[in-house]
Image 1 (cartoon, rainbow, N blue to C red):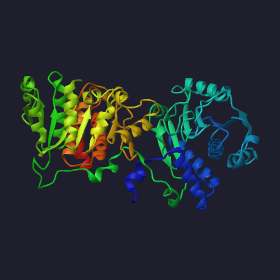
Image 2 (cartoon, rainbow, N blue to C red):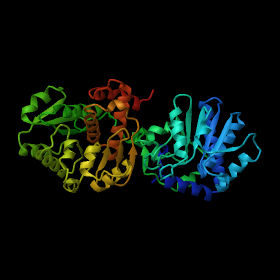
Image 3 (cartoon, rainbow, N blue to C red):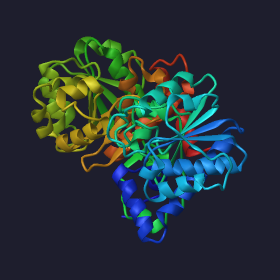
Image 4 (cartoon, helix red, strand yellow):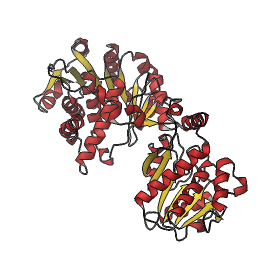
Length: 502
């Protein structure tokens, strides 16, 4: 299946995939030296776009990242920048293109081209530091003297010094975002071939700064060697499948959904219902305990409320094939009844979202939940709920993918770096959620948005991915002071601008 332009633009490559493309480029006739020269030139372009000439120190490591650093130093010096180069190790220990570019730096082509030993003192007087020590393939904690240099660098950042990282800030694991002891806090990271998960997953994202992918001349045939399965969330991934309103639509064709409401925490289901309506569901029914009917009924004239007195009434409600999708969890309560209703909903085989309490009730009985999944299902845990059902060890991306595979459901693992994973290994990292979403009820709104898109017939993975992006973008527009009620009310403007960009 041909990769779409949107997928290509949003793709994230693993470290192994980057190496595979690099190798394929060589087989296609583009030498590693040419790629290194292009990479260094790309970093120089991005630097001079943002900063005026200033004393700059280029920190070079013992591998190809260090080779990039020598090219960068040469390029900046040719533009008149005052440059110092510090190397971890010796020139004699370098190999291949890194050695060639170090020797070129020393060869007299430029004046004052000495190479200093790496130590904290090399930072004295610098206004800009280029971190070309280690790339995304690093998988061990940084040691001395690198650690002391980065400690000194970070102590001065944001005062009189900025840092540019080559490929990824040294010390950040390219595939997980883990910081291996310490990493410099970059204002800009310039990367090549493909962006890495470590640029977007926390805590790596916090030190990567602005991430720019530069073209270094890799042939299209070399890129075609890999088929990415990880993407940064972007409307280009799902916009051509978004279920926009059509002239022939009516409320029933837009989908009738059911939200199972609780008796006490009624706000959760009400927020979810509002969100489902705003994103396009035709009808939303709250299955309410009889004692809470008046509370739900007072929410909005458009929210339908069905009193459900017992299990027979609940089974009759969900047996109605006109009910297209279900949401259970927000405010439901961690009870045997919630668990039983989750299993009954799953038995219908129709799309559903399980959130919050509907996940927690299966702590210690995750196999029972997973065994009941037979239709399109989205599980939306935060980290605490995730740990009640799945193995919580390891990095976030690996955990989410394993959970989706184990449960045979789409798993949306919430956080500032939300990961959405499908059972087939496809995954998306959502990066547009602002910190203002850390407020009560925001997750209920997200669940309702997914539900509404399922009602409109959107595929389960697309629905989760689109809802996560729309949730974040709406929160960004509302800004400081956001409360969860703001999200459904401001969503229509985001949708309008997405459909008809100004």
